[in-house]
Image (cartoon, rainbow, N blue to C red; front, side):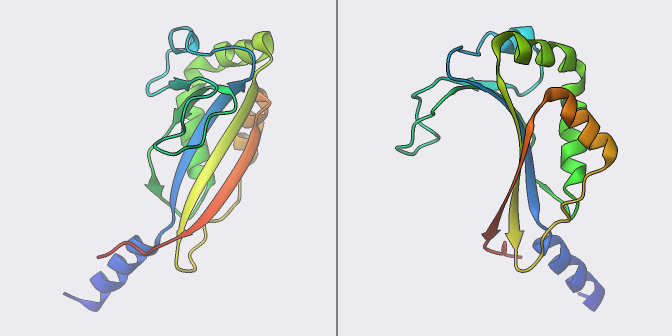
Length: 150
């Protein structure tokens, strides 16, 4: 194996992982009907009081979510742009639901950081403008993680 391929492998292994998610939440309204009203691939819902994953924690609100798979990147704008592109076909319906049901909209960018490799938290004006159309909050959570094995 050449020195270059070792460096390339190390860079791929140390590149942060990012998962982008868009969530609508409500304390008053169950949101499972949005699955049919806003037909987006991969959308899921949950109900207030349900367990979170396999933990003892319980959901504090009802929710609807579109979440992209983990991806390796040094730029947070890429996953945000991809998420906004997935939401775009349902944008008018999503915004209408937000206003009609007084929902809270949230975008989360969850980052697994390996070593000292942190992605750039730079967002394009187009991404900010598109995000503003939903009236959504933006959260970036960075968690140090173990470096994956080769």
